Each structure stands twice: as C-alpha cells, then as structure tokens.
Image 1 (tube, rainbow, N blue to C red):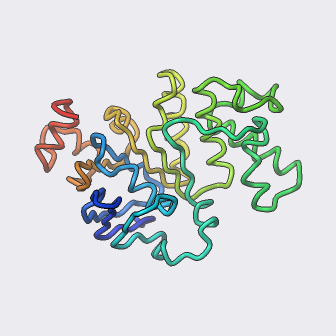
Image 2 (image 1 turned 180 degrees about the horizontal axis):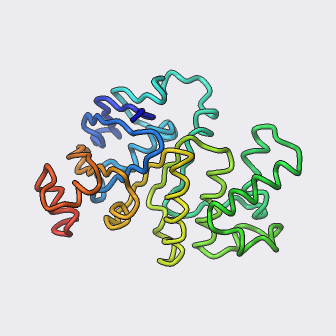
Image 3 (image 1 turned 60 degrees about the vertical axis):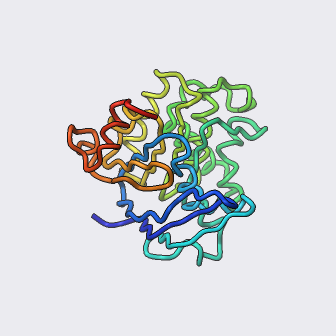
Length: 251
C-alpha cells in the first residue's frame, strides 16, 4: 500500500517539556488511521506538526522528518497551500461569524473561486458529506454560529472538506456532538476514506475500533505500537500497556 505520510524520528519540545520522543511510522493512502492514548500523549501535537500549525506556538523545537508524498513538509514554501491539502477539525467547533453558506464557501473564495454555480455545488456537496445539508438547506443565509453545538461541528467538517483536502485530521471531533450525530459522521468518514486519508485522534477507543483500518497507541510522547485495528484490540497486542489501555485499565 502506498504511503501518504512518512514520519521518522519525530521529536517535539514545548520549552522544557518533551511532547514527542522520536516517533516513526507511515500513514497509508486512503486509510483511516486511529490514534489513541491518554491525555498528554502527544496526539494533538502530531496533527499540528503534520499541517504545520505547530508554528503558531512559541518556544517549540522540532526535530526529525515528516514527508507528504515523499516531500519534506518543512521544505514546502507555500504553507497556506499545504494547509489546504490537510484539513483540520478541532475538538470544539470554531465557526466563522458568517452565514452557513459563507462558512463553507470561504476557503474556495480565498483560493480565487467566484462563479456562484460552482460555489453552490461545493457548499451542497460538503454539507451533504458532513450530514448537515437536510437540516440547513432552507436557511443557508443564517449565521453558522446560531446552530447547535453538534451542527456547528458538522459545519466545521464541511468547511474542512470545502478545499478538497488530501488528508483530513480529526482531533476529538465528537466531544461536542451527541451520540446519534456522532454515528452519522462516522458513516460519512467511512465513505470519505475512498477520497482522502483520514487521521482520527480519539479518546473513545471504541470509535477507533469501529472506524480505523489501523490504530496507533501513544503514551507519554512515545509510539507504543501501530498495527491493524483488529490486532490492537485483540487479546494479544504487542504491548501489555496497549491491552490495558484499550480495556480501560488506565487512562
């Protein structure tokens, strides 16, 4: 299987705090990779490195290599172009103070798209993909910030999809979403992996078990193991700490 991302000996420090301790693994194209582990394991830091938003945090030190399609990401001069290739959805929805329509159309317009028919098509497609279209199609001019928390999170997903990313990074997307909506989004993600690579950071181990082709277990900045999800959730993963974590013995 072809690699989309290749990570080698990645180390990250926030001041005196070591967040990642030299982790190495590959992410396959068109897979859902679940990333699990307790708080302070380095999961969010990893996503920030991949889409280069770690650069917004002061006093950070990064060592090692992260390649996207064989190209070192830190050598890519067009950072905004890179971030368009890598969509990010954060734990809590961050809606723009714009209409529902304009939230989704924002990135395509920023990229230079002006034709209304094309924007209409993108808005509908992305809202459909985010399982939100049927609920908002008659009020696209309403403020996105007036939606419920779960709807705002789905709007955030639609916005992330609007620039047709090659990679979608989801960081605890279901924290602010009710269980029924979570399952609807999960169904969408199963379809989306045919079009993109998905990195799913989640504290809900059963969510990784349901969705991920492979799962990585991180602990205290270390990658303990990465394997097929069935192996990680079996009675004999490579590490006892993996077994203990996925069975709720700690975390």
